[in-house]
Image (cartoon, rainbow, N blue to C red):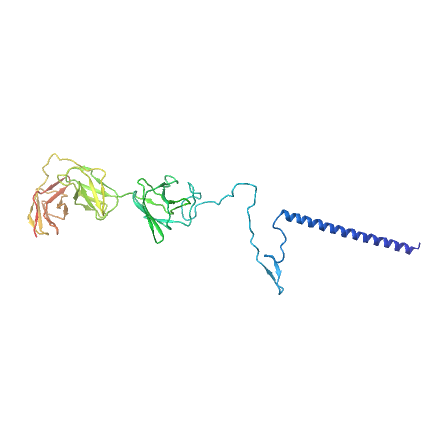
Length: 374
């Protein structure tokens, strides 16, 4: 065999080997691709929702007729709760109180129910004494129970007396009138119903009720007594044992000066104003004098005349700090240099009556009447 023939035979063998290797490689690649496709199908079955989405599905990019790309909106996914195998119900959302200015901490309300953000109310007045009336105005008519929450006592609250429940609406509001408890302190109003509750954002301030005291607590008739009011009152009248007393009011209106009338016994002071009345909690004790003869006496002249008449009172002896009253009303006076003559005038629109003198520790009422003539 020639040398060229050997080269040809070797070349053919190499070519045959290469062809066989090509067929083996092609078969291996085809098998790998088939195995990979089966794995992807299994993965898709393990993870639902990962199926292939065609080119026309929402959220994909497709070429338009003019060559530009357009995007269709993605479809909204529907999320169903995952079945974890537990029979427990899903956890509900927190029922914290709404952030509407209430003072309640961020906890569910005690006793059940939930805080209401849509329903609200206001109240007026914002302060007052115990046993006073407060009007609640609701944002909508609703059957509710009214509670009063006192931070100094606790957060549970107590129901309070509803005096009037107005079923009619005025401007979209339902009004409820309640009474502040007699032993109440500062607190919040809270409305409760089956489904929820709402608490006022402002606190109601309990103020001290109007009251008065007096001093001294005892003395003989004619004693000057000062009544100290907790606050000034207009159109105020002072009574002692159901009889009106003349009074002198201080500049600030909080101190009244009166005198215990002659021949009076121990008794109570009482104040009247605007259809209201308030009686002192303790009596004034009249101390009987051992000497019944007055310290001073007086006469007066003239004994009659029209309103405006000038009258002179002649004292048996001068007396400092003496006050002149006519029909239980104080009169302005002019005192003479020796202090024994007092000059006064009969007030307009007065009727016939008696003059009376008051001084520290004593009084004297002249038994003779002054006759007012027309």
